[in-house]
Amino acid sequence: MTITLKVPGMKCQHCEAAVKGALTELEGVKSANVDLSAKTVTIEYENLDVAALKEAIEDVGFDVEE
Ligand SMILES: [Cu+2]
Image (cartoon, rainbow, N blue to C red; front, top):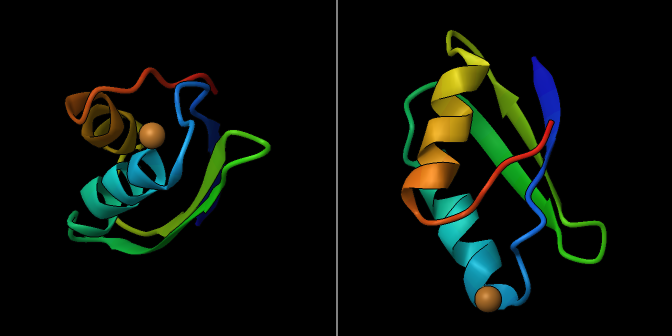
């Protein structure tokens, strides 16, 4: 499955790396690609709840909008 989440707080490549790292650490996440100008992250995943994806992003300090 693929989902795109809006993460408005991402401002630079450090933010991108933090969000991407938090997501790809999760078992079930195949890829996470950040679009910094759109402030979105597109996640390819399986066997996971969207809630778990959001939680991982929030755990590294960013709010998520769907
Ligand atoms: Cu940053």
